[in-house]
Length: 248
Image 1 (tube, rainbow, N blue to C red):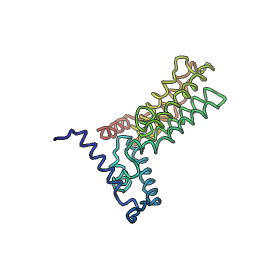
Image 2: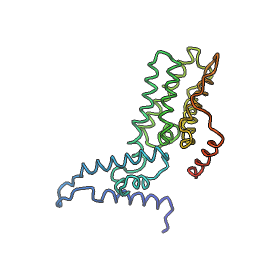
Image 3: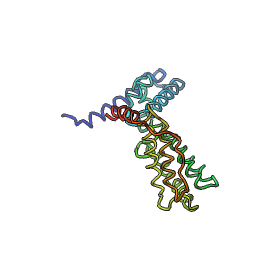
Image 4: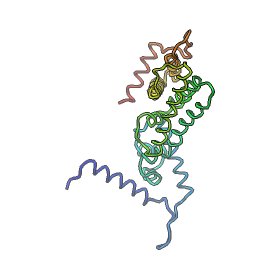
């Protein structure tokens, strides 16, 4: 009986997982005795995989496969499956703490005495982190990987950001129609700008953050000097040419 493509993929995944469980990651033992894992080697392999995953997720995002991560780590894919049952488990191990760090930034900002400065400080700190990490940006803003732990951290972040916006509005400094849900889109714009201009002008996002902060003010007597020059026409052309192959 012919199998559907999805069934074949599931069987292939199970075969790789079982290959990992059955391969030589365990000490041999006489029949009837408990087989003990090689804890030191296992932990060393786990750290190699996490390091490799962090590098490829940061640069290329969450679309990379476990096979690609295994190649980058210099281990067999069976070793990856011995440490992590699937990519979701790997993403959870890698990013739960990092998503929590963004929430901690918001909590710290809420303790600042100046509500407007607190909002600006959070935007800058969060954008600095997300601008250099494609995988974290995807996870925070729209990915569904990593289940309950990362989801909890994301849901914890939303009311904190809304509180930052409300406090700034209460002072009259932030415009009244600014919403907490505007902040994730601002983060998306800034981090995408950084990703596009990584080769030509990786700090260009700071220019756009300054423009957006001016736009968030309810009123102002002047304009804030932009910290980074605009892209030259040739830089813009180069940026778009460099980005196109990665999209494909």
